[in-house]
Image (cartoon, rainbow, N blue to C red; front, top):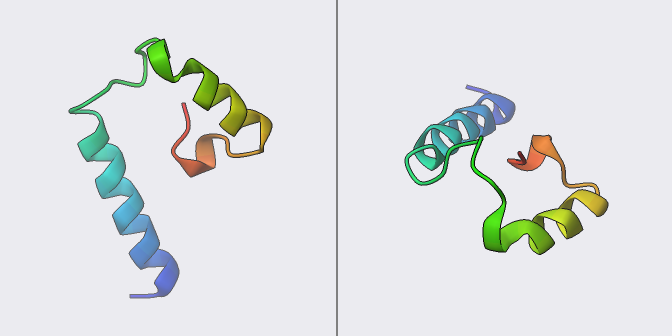
Length: 50
């Protein structure tokens, strides 16, 4: 398994687990300012974004 494949496995596992805590269609709530700053800095969906 290549390094890229290993990262992909971890990313998919994290994504699957995160749905148990918060769905993708939930509102931003208290995290809105943090999410806005993250998006402005260029950390969009490829970094586990919305």
